[in-house]
Image (tube, rainbow, N blue to C red; front, side, top):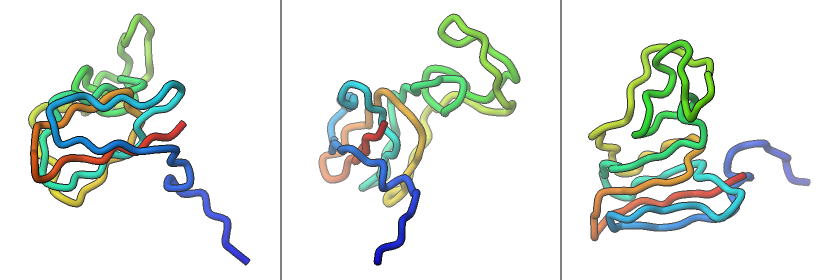
Length: 117
């Protein structure tokens, strides 16, 4: 008899690999839930589904206590910064809910983006 678990891997509905400076976007009604770094990489664009909740390159998530994002007021934490120039090391995985990710071109590395609902 198997053990029923409720971890993030059970919610993966697809994935994409990219080693070029081009955007990965998930299929309709899906988001990127995890990004695995094969080799160290700097993301040039990372767009969150909810820019006030998940870190991204567009808005400093959880920075302002309350903020207006995409025309609506959202409750946030404080201290967050917009992602800019951070290098994620090889073998690391980040988690969130993003609608697009663009890595720096890296022909012998790249990223794997995992999709979920």
